[in-house]
Image: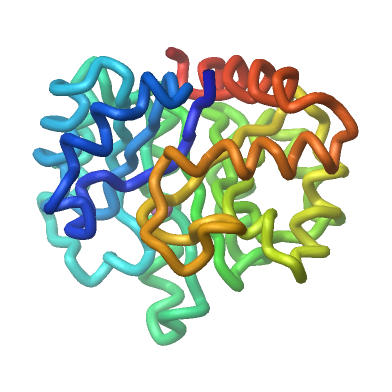
Length: 254
Ligand code: NI
């Protein structure tokens, strides 16, 4: 069975066929899915999906591209949602300087306070880091991320950044980008991560892997990521599937 450790089924791209897609998971060898929220207004829908499907778990958090939606109730709303038994992480949170560059201090503030919340609640964090590697590491260091642990999702950093992140006890997630033809950097990073710290994901509905690139992504395609990872690691697909499934369960305490 495969564990898609990052997918967004509350996205409107699933409005037409959300139930049909999710109902087809188990017969297609997808055993577990983690569905993180990106803003407070999504929390109810994420929880509703988790309650409907026993194999879907959720995370509560404010994504760096959504910090403009924050107000004085945001942190309490995330804390309250995190009390739900199927909310297993604080995420997704992080820094994104690719899309938005003019609010770096606001993004850093929200990353820091949410890592503090994760430590308080003893939940792992789901980290989104796009074009912000040095600042992401600095905030995580300052807020002692090793006390809660978590995952760097859709890892886009270098192999050189890995020792410190691994030293913090964190997991490294790879998705569709690993399968892209010019993906030398993610492949080199995946090769450098020990097998016991690797998880796989889709980031559905975005980032569909080769040969589905350009289509709407779903967890039904996570096996393409497993296949590529097996090739990089020189082990069988079955072994890759088994180990990443167990890693995902340990990461999220499932
Ligand atoms: Ni995401």
